[in-house]
Length: 349
Ligand SMILES: *[C@@H]1O[C@H](CO)[C@@H](O)[C@H](O)[C@H]1NC(C)=O
Ligand SMILES: *[C@@H]1O[C@H](CO)[C@@H](O)[C@H](O)[C@H]1NC(C)=O
Ligand SMILES: *[C@@H]1O[C@H](CO)[C@@H](O)[C@H](O)[C@H]1NC(C)=O
Ligand SMILES: *[C@@H]1O[C@H](CO)[C@@H](O)[C@H](O)[C@H]1NC(C)=O
Ligand SMILES: *[C@@H]1O[C@H](CO)[C@@H](O)[C@H](O)[C@H]1NC(C)=O
Figure 1 (cartoon, protein in one colour):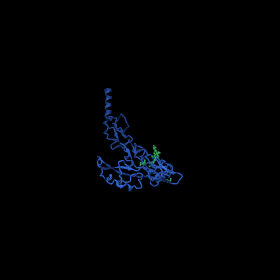
Figure 2: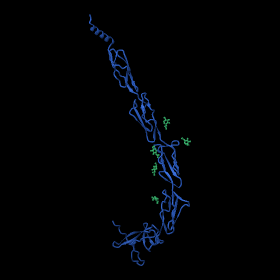
Figure 3: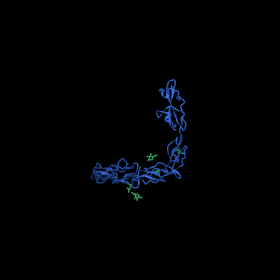
Figure 4: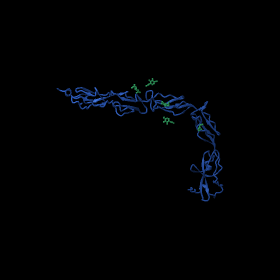
């Protein structure tokens, strides 16, 4: 008699010998899944590895059968991420990226004067394509420039059809009698609008008044406006102090207000003086008097050092102050040496 316990044990051993050993749960592979996934498999059972979406298998077997030994064969399968098409270059812009593989995102920016037409980032999808579609950098354009009141376009060339590109300019001119406040040149900005417009305002100047001892001419009009001109002159022996022509400025006043200045009568009868660096006889050069603004240098004597030096005198509106050191000799005192004939003092140093 065989004991039931022994019988059971034998039949178990027989079964194992025939059926082989079970396989364990298969190794996990990165980015892959196994079907069917169980904790053990009978010999002869099959499993298949699938790469997860976004990954593709490279070479090697994907399908395995549990062998009688109960040990899964060595698995060299690798699931690698899909690679999206190269997207490293964006004309007139830059692409920020690490790799072009699933599931990475890359981002875009355009250089100044261009804008992104499209998305600012895209993802490499499971299918290995970029989503959304890659953008382009399109040039910024400005519409035709607005024209300020009382102004007209002086220089403007649209460079993109009727529109302008970033940094293009337009130059304005005010209508006559109007002055410009602000910059005459506007620029197409990176925002696609124009920089600040100038203003043109009507500007009137008062009628200029006639100077004493002179006259002023200006256009015979109801009013005088920006850029109108007036000319001045003086009666004889008077000299104009200021420009002969003045202009009505943008602040509504004249560029200058010239006046007429008197010439000087000379109290000295005879003297040799320096005039514009040359020795001249005062009584000959200035026999009609000195004009306002003219300058001469008189010679004076330094008695101790027996030498001469000069002092300046200028005719200012009818008055000239003769230097006190200057001594005029009577024509009878022929033995006296004139200061202008004495050797010059050494300049004090
Ligand atoms: C912007 O992109 C759209 C779609 O791709 C295209 O139709 C359009 O012409 C583009 N515009 C410019 C200014 O490039
Ligand atoms: C420019 O503007 C004119 C007049 O508005 C229009 O007839 C023309 O089609 C425009 N051209 C372009 C390139 O937009
Ligand atoms: C006017 O604008 C132009 C261009 O923007 C600039 O070059 C120029 O210096 C400006 N002039 C003045 C007076 O501000
Ligand atoms: C142009 O557009 C920008 C941005 O919208 C704005 O800040 C700026 O003030 C605008 N410039 C002018 C002159 O309107
Ligand atoms: C014109 O007037 C302004 C302001 O009243 C003044 O600052 C300027 O100096 C004047 N110009 C002349 C040339 O007088």
